[in-house]
Image (cartoon, rainbow, N blue to C red):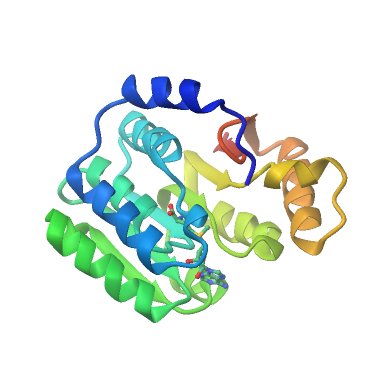
Length: 211
Ligand SMILES: C[S@@+](CC[C@H](N)C(=O)[O-])C[C@H]1O[C@@H](n2cnc3c(N)ncnc32)[C@H](O)[C@@H]1O
């Protein structure tokens, strides 16, 4: 995982970003205690950007590809209006149970729609339009997730892709995951259907808006 920010700068950013509801500390603590790769959790900066996008777009329907322990899911649920829905696509049923538990605890259960199974299959079952997609699952499928999400997103809607720098490996991609991310980044930069920016935020955050 690329850590671009020195710790003191990260702490300063955190203390000058909107405070988080207590549920997010619970999710982080649970993830650190129970998951072997807790760094997969997206974190407060990515979460805050997702919330800003959701509020700016007036989004009511969003989809997350790869939900892990629910940090991004609940960040998005919090920012959505009461009738809004976040469709959380996650392979592991046990993680789905935990997300449901956290959503219930936070009082946002009605906004969280879980889809357990391979995300590519779940995406085929969803009907658009969606306002925002957050892609954050298995990297080899990023080109497929981008294509599937693009078909679901309305004009003006946004696709956000996490780990777009993949620890810097995109500069000289040797592994299938790095190659898939690099291919996706290149495809998006050349895609005349979208305007995009690749932000050096945490491990790289690609944001593409459908024109
Ligand atoms: C980086 S984590 C997601 C982090 C989460 N978005 C967050 O904000 O904290 C990736 C997740 O994708 C899930 N995943 C991997 N392959 C998948 C697939 N084919 N379909 C659905 N989920 C998948 C993993 O089980 C894992 O929970």
